[in-house]
Length: 316
Image (tube, rainbow, N blue to C red; front, side):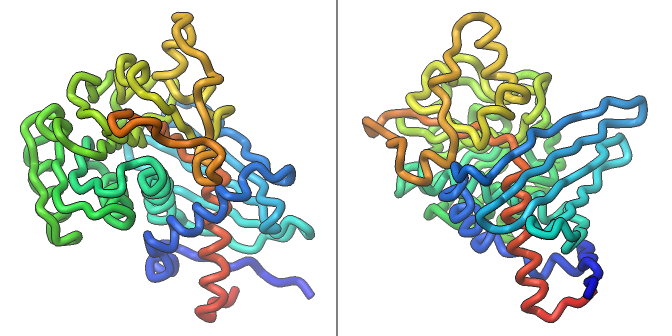
Protein backbone atom coordinates (compact mmCIF):
# COMPACT_ATOMS: atom_id res chain seq x y z
CA UNK A 1 0.00 0.00 0.00
CA UNK A 2 1.40 3.39 -0.99
CA UNK A 3 1.04 6.17 1.55
CA UNK A 4 1.06 9.79 0.47
CA UNK A 5 3.48 12.03 2.37
CA UNK A 6 2.27 14.44 5.01
CA UNK A 7 2.28 18.05 3.87
CA UNK A 8 2.90 20.23 6.91
CA UNK A 9 2.82 23.98 6.39
CA UNK A 10 3.73 26.63 8.96
CA UNK A 11 0.22 26.65 10.45
CA UNK A 12 0.22 22.87 10.89
CA UNK A 13 3.71 22.82 12.42
CA UNK A 14 3.31 25.77 14.80
CA UNK A 15 1.36 23.94 17.55
CA UNK A 16 3.82 21.02 17.40
CA UNK A 17 6.96 23.09 17.98
CA UNK A 18 8.27 23.41 21.53
CA UNK A 19 11.72 24.72 22.47
CA UNK A 20 12.26 22.38 25.41
CA UNK A 21 11.37 19.39 23.25
CA UNK A 22 13.65 20.64 20.48
CA UNK A 23 16.62 20.88 22.85
CA UNK A 24 15.93 17.40 24.23
CA UNK A 25 15.57 16.05 20.69
CA UNK A 26 18.94 17.45 19.62
CA UNK A 27 20.57 16.27 22.84
CA UNK A 28 19.50 12.71 22.10
CA UNK A 29 20.60 13.08 18.48
CA UNK A 30 24.07 14.38 19.33
CA UNK A 31 24.59 11.48 21.72
CA UNK A 32 24.42 9.17 18.70
CA UNK A 33 26.11 11.60 16.29
CA UNK A 34 29.30 9.50 15.91
CA UNK A 35 27.43 6.37 14.81
CA UNK A 36 28.81 4.92 11.56
CA UNK A 37 25.38 5.13 9.89
CA UNK A 38 25.09 8.89 10.35
CA UNK A 39 26.22 11.28 7.65
CA UNK A 40 25.95 15.05 7.39
CA UNK A 41 26.31 16.70 3.99
CA UNK A 42 27.45 20.32 4.43
CA UNK A 43 25.42 23.14 2.96
CA UNK A 44 26.16 24.03 -0.65
CA UNK A 45 25.27 27.39 -2.16
CA UNK A 46 24.51 28.55 -5.68
CA UNK A 47 24.95 32.30 -5.98
CA UNK A 48 22.56 33.66 -8.58
CA UNK A 49 21.67 37.20 -9.70
CA UNK A 50 18.39 37.06 -7.81
CA UNK A 51 19.62 35.42 -4.61
CA UNK A 52 21.30 32.34 -3.15
CA UNK A 53 20.03 28.76 -3.36
CA UNK A 54 21.03 26.70 -0.28
CA UNK A 55 20.94 22.89 -0.16
CA UNK A 56 21.84 20.54 2.71
CA UNK A 57 21.10 16.92 3.66
CA UNK A 58 21.81 14.23 6.24
CA UNK A 59 21.24 10.55 7.06
CA UNK A 60 20.32 9.44 10.58
CA UNK A 61 20.73 5.69 10.28
CA UNK A 62 20.01 4.72 13.91
CA UNK A 63 16.73 6.66 13.78
CA UNK A 64 15.82 5.30 10.31
CA UNK A 65 15.49 8.61 8.45
CA UNK A 66 17.20 10.82 5.91
CA UNK A 67 16.24 14.29 4.85
CA UNK A 68 17.13 17.42 2.94
CA UNK A 69 16.50 21.12 3.34
CA UNK A 70 16.42 23.77 0.64
CA UNK A 71 15.91 27.48 0.80
CA UNK A 72 16.33 30.44 -1.51
CA UNK A 73 17.50 33.66 0.10
CA UNK A 74 16.74 36.84 -1.82
CA UNK A 75 16.02 40.51 -1.07
CA UNK A 76 12.35 39.50 -0.86
CA UNK A 77 13.06 37.15 2.03
CA UNK A 78 13.67 33.46 2.56
CA UNK A 79 11.47 30.36 2.81
CA UNK A 80 12.70 27.04 4.18
CA UNK A 81 11.50 23.63 2.96
CA UNK A 82 12.36 20.26 4.46
CA UNK A 83 11.75 16.76 3.11
CA UNK A 84 11.87 13.72 5.43
CA UNK A 85 12.31 10.18 4.07
CA UNK A 86 12.20 6.66 5.46
CA UNK A 87 15.73 5.29 5.19
CA UNK A 88 14.84 1.65 4.50
CA UNK A 89 12.30 2.23 1.73
CA UNK A 90 13.38 5.68 0.55
CA UNK A 91 9.74 6.79 0.77
CA UNK A 92 8.98 10.47 1.26
CA UNK A 93 7.26 10.71 4.64
CA UNK A 94 6.70 14.42 4.99
CA UNK A 95 7.30 17.75 3.32
CA UNK A 96 7.46 20.72 5.66
CA UNK A 97 7.44 24.46 5.15
CA UNK A 98 10.01 24.97 7.79
CA UNK A 99 10.81 28.61 8.59
CA UNK A 100 9.62 28.35 12.21
CA UNK A 101 11.12 24.88 12.45
CA UNK A 102 14.49 26.23 11.29
CA UNK A 103 14.44 29.09 13.77
CA UNK A 104 13.68 26.81 16.70
CA UNK A 105 16.20 24.19 15.53
CA UNK A 106 18.90 26.88 15.41
CA UNK A 107 17.90 28.11 18.85
CA UNK A 108 17.81 24.58 20.22
CA UNK A 109 21.37 23.88 19.08
CA UNK A 110 22.45 27.01 20.94
CA UNK A 111 20.42 25.96 23.97
CA UNK A 112 22.10 22.56 23.97
CA UNK A 113 25.54 24.17 23.84
CA UNK A 114 24.61 26.57 26.63
CA UNK A 115 23.37 23.66 28.73
CA UNK A 116 26.71 21.90 28.53
CA UNK A 117 29.14 24.81 28.24
CA UNK A 118 27.85 27.81 30.21
CA UNK A 119 28.22 28.12 33.96
CA UNK A 120 25.28 26.52 35.80
CA UNK A 121 24.37 29.80 37.52
CA UNK A 122 24.59 31.94 34.39
CA UNK A 123 21.86 34.56 34.78
CA UNK A 124 22.77 37.40 32.40
CA UNK A 125 22.50 36.93 28.64
CA UNK A 126 23.89 39.38 26.08
CA UNK A 127 22.11 39.09 22.76
CA UNK A 128 23.64 40.81 19.74
CA UNK A 129 21.18 40.81 16.87
CA UNK A 130 17.43 41.45 16.73
CA UNK A 131 16.41 39.67 13.52
CA UNK A 132 14.09 36.74 12.91
CA UNK A 133 16.39 34.26 14.67
CA UNK A 134 16.94 36.30 17.84
CA UNK A 135 13.79 35.34 19.75
CA UNK A 136 14.57 31.63 19.51
CA UNK A 137 18.09 32.25 20.84
CA UNK A 138 16.69 33.95 23.92
CA UNK A 139 14.03 31.28 24.45
CA UNK A 140 16.66 28.55 24.26
CA UNK A 141 18.97 30.24 26.77
CA UNK A 142 16.07 30.73 29.18
CA UNK A 143 15.12 27.06 28.82
CA UNK A 144 18.47 25.81 30.15
CA UNK A 145 19.76 28.54 32.47
CA UNK A 146 18.21 30.79 35.17
CA UNK A 147 18.33 33.89 32.97
CA UNK A 148 17.06 36.93 34.88
CA UNK A 149 18.39 39.68 32.61
CA UNK A 150 18.80 39.93 28.85
CA UNK A 151 20.77 42.78 27.33
CA UNK A 152 19.93 43.39 23.70
CA UNK A 153 21.89 45.24 21.07
CA UNK A 154 21.07 45.83 17.41
CA UNK A 155 22.19 48.67 15.15
CA UNK A 156 18.68 50.01 14.51
CA UNK A 157 17.51 51.69 17.72
CA UNK A 158 13.80 51.56 16.88
CA UNK A 159 13.94 47.89 15.98
CA UNK A 160 16.11 47.15 19.02
CA UNK A 161 13.63 48.75 21.41
CA UNK A 162 10.63 47.06 19.80
CA UNK A 163 12.34 43.68 20.00
CA UNK A 164 13.29 44.25 23.65
CA UNK A 165 9.66 45.06 24.49
CA UNK A 166 8.44 41.92 22.73
CA UNK A 167 11.09 39.78 24.40
CA UNK A 168 10.19 41.10 27.85
CA UNK A 169 6.54 40.20 27.28
CA UNK A 170 7.40 36.76 25.94
CA UNK A 171 9.81 35.73 28.71
CA UNK A 172 8.75 37.90 31.66
CA UNK A 173 12.36 38.83 32.47
CA UNK A 174 14.22 42.12 32.61
CA UNK A 175 15.24 43.08 29.07
CA UNK A 176 17.61 46.01 28.63
CA UNK A 177 18.20 47.52 25.16
CA UNK A 178 21.75 48.88 25.09
CA UNK A 179 23.39 51.60 23.03
CA UNK A 180 26.39 49.45 22.12
CA UNK A 181 27.42 45.82 21.82
CA UNK A 182 30.04 46.43 24.48
CA UNK A 183 27.44 47.62 26.98
CA UNK A 184 25.47 44.43 26.39
CA UNK A 185 28.44 42.09 26.67
CA UNK A 186 30.45 43.36 29.63
CA UNK A 187 29.63 41.27 32.68
CA UNK A 188 27.32 38.84 30.84
CA UNK A 189 27.78 35.13 31.54
CA UNK A 190 26.43 34.07 28.14
CA UNK A 191 26.96 36.05 24.95
CA UNK A 192 24.93 35.09 21.88
CA UNK A 193 25.58 36.65 18.50
CA UNK A 194 22.89 36.13 15.88
CA UNK A 195 23.70 38.51 13.04
CA UNK A 196 24.61 38.53 9.37
CA UNK A 197 27.69 40.63 10.03
CA UNK A 198 30.61 40.68 7.64
CA UNK A 199 32.92 42.20 10.26
CA UNK A 200 33.14 41.15 13.94
CA UNK A 201 30.52 42.52 16.30
CA UNK A 202 32.22 41.06 19.40
CA UNK A 203 35.57 42.08 20.91
CA UNK A 204 37.48 39.75 23.23
CA UNK A 205 38.32 42.65 25.54
CA UNK A 206 34.66 42.89 26.56
CA UNK A 207 34.41 39.30 27.80
CA UNK A 208 34.46 38.58 31.52
CA UNK A 209 36.32 35.50 32.79
CA UNK A 210 34.17 32.39 32.53
CA UNK A 211 31.97 33.71 29.70
CA UNK A 212 30.42 31.31 27.23
CA UNK A 213 30.19 32.68 23.69
CA UNK A 214 27.50 31.33 21.41
CA UNK A 215 28.28 32.51 17.87
CA UNK A 216 25.15 31.48 15.98
CA UNK A 217 24.64 33.92 13.14
CA UNK A 218 27.47 33.87 10.61
CA UNK A 219 27.45 30.61 8.65
CA UNK A 220 29.24 31.59 5.45
CA UNK A 221 32.89 32.08 4.60
CA UNK A 222 32.41 35.81 4.02
CA UNK A 223 30.61 36.58 7.31
CA UNK A 224 32.23 37.10 10.72
CA UNK A 225 30.77 37.86 14.15
CA UNK A 226 33.70 37.35 16.53
CA UNK A 227 37.23 38.74 16.46
CA UNK A 228 40.39 36.67 16.21
CA UNK A 229 41.41 37.46 19.77
CA UNK A 230 38.21 35.86 21.11
CA UNK A 231 39.19 32.62 19.39
CA UNK A 232 42.72 32.83 20.76
CA UNK A 233 41.39 33.48 24.26
CA UNK A 234 39.03 30.50 24.31
CA UNK A 235 40.19 27.35 26.06
CA UNK A 236 37.60 25.29 24.18
CA UNK A 237 36.34 25.74 20.61
CA UNK A 238 33.26 23.72 19.68
CA UNK A 239 31.24 23.48 16.48
CA UNK A 240 28.39 21.27 15.30
CA UNK A 241 30.31 19.77 12.35
CA UNK A 242 34.02 20.26 11.64
CA UNK A 243 33.73 19.40 7.95
CA UNK A 244 31.15 22.14 7.52
CA UNK A 245 33.20 24.53 9.66
CA UNK A 246 36.11 24.17 7.24
CA UNK A 247 33.78 25.61 4.59
CA UNK A 248 31.70 28.13 6.54
CA UNK A 249 33.43 29.20 9.79
CA UNK A 250 35.14 32.33 8.47
CA UNK A 251 36.70 33.23 11.81
CA UNK A 252 38.51 29.87 11.92
CA UNK A 253 39.31 29.92 8.20
CA UNK A 254 40.90 33.38 8.41
CA UNK A 255 43.28 32.29 11.16
CA UNK A 256 44.06 29.06 9.36
CA UNK A 257 45.05 30.95 6.22
CA UNK A 258 47.29 33.14 8.35
CA UNK A 259 49.00 30.06 9.74
CA UNK A 260 47.70 30.81 13.24
CA UNK A 261 45.11 28.09 13.73
CA UNK A 262 45.08 24.36 14.40
CA UNK A 263 41.91 22.56 13.35
CA UNK A 264 42.78 19.87 15.88
CA UNK A 265 41.86 22.39 18.58
CA UNK A 266 38.20 22.31 17.46
CA UNK A 267 35.87 19.62 18.80
CA UNK A 268 32.34 18.76 17.79
CA UNK A 269 29.32 19.35 20.00
CA UNK A 270 28.70 15.59 20.06
CA UNK A 271 31.95 15.09 21.98
CA UNK A 272 30.86 17.62 24.60
CA UNK A 273 27.34 16.21 24.95
CA UNK A 274 28.66 12.66 25.25
CA UNK A 275 31.17 13.71 27.92
CA UNK A 276 34.25 12.79 25.88
CA UNK A 277 35.63 16.34 26.11
CA UNK A 278 35.61 18.27 29.42
CA UNK A 279 34.31 21.81 29.07
CA UNK A 280 36.23 23.85 31.62
CA UNK A 281 39.52 23.34 33.45
CA UNK A 282 39.25 26.54 35.48
CA UNK A 283 36.33 28.82 36.44
CA UNK A 284 37.72 31.69 34.37
CA UNK A 285 37.94 29.75 31.11
CA UNK A 286 36.19 31.39 28.16
CA UNK A 287 34.54 28.89 25.80
CA UNK A 288 32.95 29.15 22.37
CA UNK A 289 30.33 27.33 20.31
CA UNK A 290 30.51 28.18 16.62
CA UNK A 291 27.03 27.18 15.48
CA UNK A 292 26.64 26.64 11.75
CA UNK A 293 23.29 24.86 11.55
CA UNK A 294 23.66 21.40 10.06
CA UNK A 295 21.26 19.11 8.23
CA UNK A 296 21.66 16.37 10.85
CA UNK A 297 19.89 18.69 13.28
CA UNK A 298 17.09 19.26 10.76
CA UNK A 299 16.60 15.52 10.25
CA UNK A 300 16.48 14.82 13.97
CA UNK A 301 14.03 17.64 14.69
CA UNK A 302 12.01 17.01 11.53
CA UNK A 303 11.57 13.36 12.48
CA UNK A 304 10.41 14.43 15.93
CA UNK A 305 7.81 16.75 14.43
CA UNK A 306 6.69 14.08 11.97
CA UNK A 307 6.08 11.58 14.77
CA UNK A 308 4.30 14.24 16.80
CA UNK A 309 2.07 15.13 13.83
CA UNK A 310 1.11 11.49 13.41
CA UNK A 311 0.33 11.18 17.12
CA UNK A 312 -1.89 14.26 16.83
CA UNK A 313 -3.87 12.61 14.05
CA UNK A 314 -2.35 14.25 10.97
CA UNK A 315 -3.18 12.44 7.72
CA UNK A 316 -1.95 12.87 4.17
